[in-house]
Length: 374
Image (cartoon, rainbow, N blue to C red; front, top):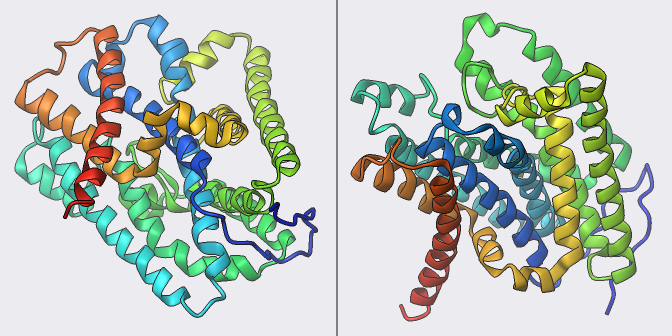
């Protein structure tokens, strides 16, 4: 039976229905994000970005830049779908504790995988320095971001659930403005603190404040998803809205690139992560715009697309396990044990990335099958 849906009003407080089971389209969207990330990490970890041919940077690594924004958006969407409607219920303390325990689990794996990433090329003292937040790694830092985010997001969810729409939108705008201002500060020379809060150009990590607007946008999309996903007409409206917004943002990126006089150079800059840390306007236009397009397509496809693209959906159904699998395989097995860095051509590294997506999906399926017989 379709859920009742009414348009949002500026003064409206969320009154959310509970999801009718797991929404496979969310897993598919998350799986697409992880798949793009695995392809990117396979190439950068085994070949090195500097050794990628021009045809590989654009379009392949240009398009993988959708991954980070899509991943964070889906993080917010999943929180809204699974937890937002429960924040006023009696069992909310138990659900909040579940999120905090998840934060501890993610933080543990972040530190364990940090050692694996750094093991072949760093001294023990440098690895210990990274473990103590004296420096940062590269490929596993997104996991460190989620570990910290899972500590503070549960605290704001009850406030978010009681806030009118105008104040939620104002919060997103205020955090964006705060990020721009904080990025101009030196933080007393404490680059690590600045990186943890708002990104730093010398550290490949993700700022909690600078990325918070993406999480909150994800919460808004998750609220809309709960209201209309199970009503085909309303879902089409949501899909068209997300698709239009995403397309306009990507078009805005190309418009700015055209004005600058060199569209290919602008695309190559994005492929080389210019504007990713800290987030730049052109980079975010392209990355977030593309993420919204991919999200819209996943929602449009729904359960049928999730079934047709089962490996990606399986990967998206357990993001942490997929992340652990691909980091272990790339950095512990291929780079360290098999001494494979620089031994792969670019097409071979792409092939490895594809196999790792399938391998991660198979590993998740196998561990679930094994759990049934414990």
